[in-house]
Length: 318
Image 1 (cartoon, rainbow, N blue to C red):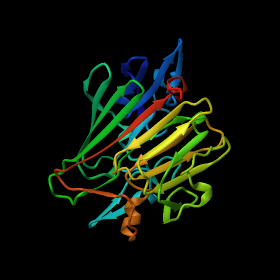
Image 2 (cartoon, helix red, strand yellow; image 1 turned 135 degrees about the vertical axis):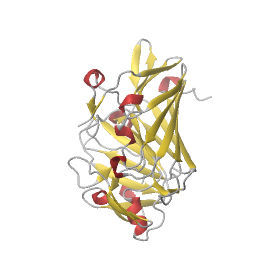
Image 3 (cartoon, rainbow, N blue to C red; image 1 turned 60 degrees about the vertical axis):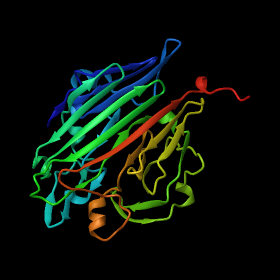
């Protein structure tokens, strides 16, 4: 099994904000913190020191940081799908019966450019690797501002035209500290049904118990994996001290995955272009899956922004 090593990590700094990034370990953000009176606040679950020292298996990654979801988000049932005359079979995730989360985050990215508070990295996919016959390239731009993080993906189909347009999904997979699950709010139009293996099977209305239009808490013993469609591109999470994170996304990221395993120190809100197993659902005739189609020579772009609002930074009411 391939081991991903974090070193050398890139350090971005803006005022009292600090971010570390590992191109070699799947193009991941590995930590994001701010300092206050000599103390650090982690806004993303940081990589453990043992992972910084020794790395981690590419398909058994730590539940930390932020990584890109490419060329698909979440699961593809049994790792198989039909696409415009092609019958494709992808490697299954260890311990699962399905392909999972794409493969760009299990590979080495190259550093293209870097300054004090921004970096640009690139992943190049050779046709046939991981069972994916298309040649494509991804540029990821990370910009750290005082109190904000912006991340952008530009995905280009470099195929020579011998294949049909590439099916594509993209997204971002952040791990937030569980304390921010005290106040969770977002607006969406649909909730996709899923089976016991977390593969989507159909779509329906959002029941009241899974509706987050008004902020609500996710309890520490809650076990949630939900797929929302028609997401409005904005979500807010917060702790009981007044610290808050606002997640904004470009319109292409119209799906949101809410994942909160029971009794763990993290939860995830993942903006993505499509629902789990979108390529098979679309083939079965479902609409609004969010699956993208990228012709040869074309580029698809999507981005997110995280704004970090601290109780100490909130102005007093007049």
